Image (cartoon, rainbow, N blue to C red; front, side):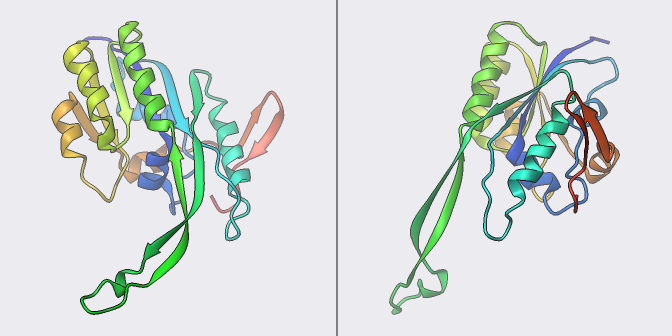
Length: 215
């Protein structure tokens, strides 16, 4: 059995919105998840986590604080690195669906649209760069975003590396395009999330900290 040298690339928001939002499993130990889904003989060299810092909202002013606590927990994993994109927020006028009927006057409403930028580009760039440098024999992408098909295809077919996908979106089947271009696809099931939680109380070089209330 081959001992693979593995790097895992995690789309943080795809993981959060697909697997943990609204569940009791948000305090997720990503090292434990990777080891649960990889083979015992695989050598997990590095985990690369791609995210963006959230802003406070009127209905959730504590969101940035909870995120910072979680990022602090992730930083206790020695071989995990965090890479940041950014959020764009702007007001957009959009039509109401109920007014898009024949013979009706279209009505518009102004909404606040937020977009996370940079994480998928950062992930794809690092994936291809690491493949060129022979940093791994197996890469795993944690995402169900079909925008990542092309870098996955390049790494597998043109650079000759094995690459798999861990699908975090429990409400959706794995992307057909990802399945066609990866060596394997595994779903991240709720049982794995339940088993792979951080301890409620952690410590780092700055002291002791706790799992956020409500998590």
